[in-house]
Image 1: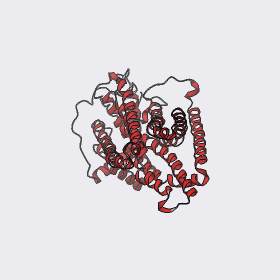
Image 2: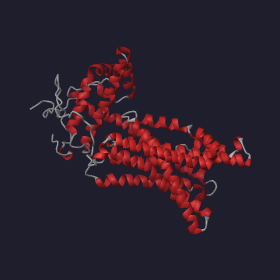
Image 3: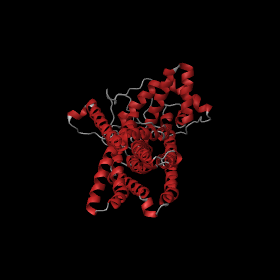
Image 4: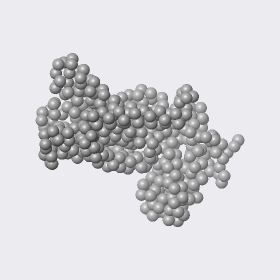
Length: 445
């Protein structure tokens, strides 16, 4: 096994043998893995500096966009819009969090994605859309046509590009946490949920202001109609558009490093599809008449939404199968018990193992099992990417680091996972393997 480049890894890298006291000599003292080394000025190497600048940017964006929205809706409209717009956020966030449970990404990534969508992307969208519509209205002397063109053409391009920037930033700078389709869907979902949250404040607040002017209230009000369309019927609209971009980035993350065209073209294709679907949604009434919205909603949006739900769940199940398949090699080599690969590929068994450890040894043991499950999952996906030729030259050291963490926790986690596997009927004995001998980076030469 060579450490010079990922192309030199064999299709099925040999699993190192386990010793009673294994040596992890390839693991550096401070291991911070990155898929792609970056040359940046020293100023940017400080995590505190980068985090501080990012927080400052998002804070300024939040103050600016919320001020603009309040000016357009008024204080009362802003507060009413805020209270109504927040209702679908926990549901959407919970759905995407459930999808991300197999190999959960850091919460800071998801919080960044939501904040970017709610503040930075929304600010860019409201400024760029307003400027473009005014320019078109002046150039064409047709304000009504400018509004229609802006909603159908300008808004989809601006808004989807602004939301895609969050996905791109996480893809580039948190590459370790962005490994496949599920990660792309989750990041895109949180970004779009944040964007829709701010946009809904604007629309609902404006509708409330209209009701105040004309004196309507109750079910016949503009606010009620806007709430029904945006919160009840289509809270998934923005996530649905942006998820297409996320899928493009997710598939690109699975591509081998040498497939540069694919790694660039697929995110652009996903972004183009997101813009196209967004344009169809925004232009449904103007393109297909007064009932165009409902026609597009029933004939196109709902089926596509169902298809993407199926794809997301299928990808999640595929991740679980990958864990079972890849960890069998480590079970055969002695790092895991024979039952652990199947226990770790079942969310029910994982939960049962943590509960068992908590009852038997307390919260600290349950935490150790939870960490063990995360490290084992990361190890499985690392080996899977090695098979696909998408790992970096630090594969051996990264594998050793993960095995070291597993080895430290195996006395607590092993019995708990074995119990869970047998309790859920997932106990299994791996078949014999032939390629796990040979190279052993854990022994000093």
